Image 1 (tube, rainbow, N blue to C red):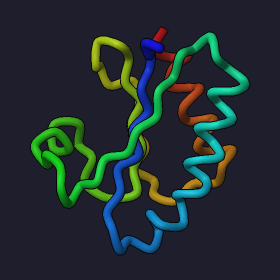
Image 2 (tube, rainbow, N blue to C red):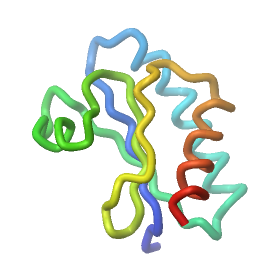
Image 3 (cartoon, one colour):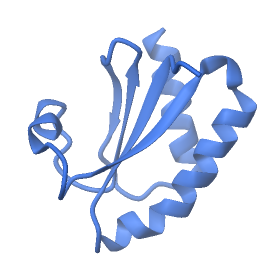
Length: 102
């Protein structure tokens, strides 16, 4: 499947808040994929300790846990730097970022 949107979970090992978000992240990703297959959303994770920090700097993602939504042209549609989110907050952030980016 080719994705139209991509959502990235920026995290780091040993981050208590990041580890708390992992099950919420997985549940939210599954819900969006099941409830909105027409959006063709892909979900991925970015370990900020082993990946390119220059990219994080470019989008002003300066901490963890953070979440970003990109369109198929890799344009940033939304960045959430509020840290730990409830499942409904994360889901709303993703869907609202996609809707505003259309």
